[in-house]
Image (cartoon, rainbow, N blue to C red; front, side, top):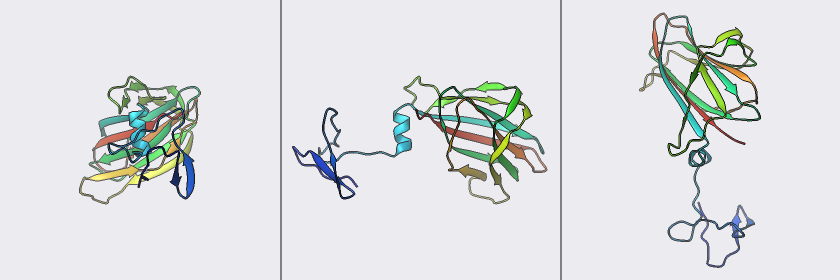
Length: 193
């Protein structure tokens, strides 16, 4: 909850401590002129043109992989904020590996800025169907199980990974079911400098 401000006030109580307001940068107030508006960090990243989404619908044959290569650009530390995989067939395994070695990075994919008024680009390149020579070290595992939810078989992970600069990561979905799976993939990345 925001604290009310009084005209000419130079500090505000936040968790029992005085915080200086004003200074060379004006603090925006809400329409009543009494409160400092706030929004969630994730939402602010969209406004700052630093939030990015990738979406794909794919067909994954039984006992095969859907591979994505995440390549981090020089000097950057993007956050792999979360993912959602949904599948018409289960079970499916989800792996994240780092230090992946490739013979070919694969097909470059377009990652969209969530702020559609911005031309900023994501601090990573994402590739589909890389040719892998060494998967690297597994740093994450998850599964889309037999559990049925209203929206189908869905796995959303709220874990956040801060990716290393000049590094390759393999994100792999393995269809372990006995039939073809139609898979929806949604990835969310945030640029943080």
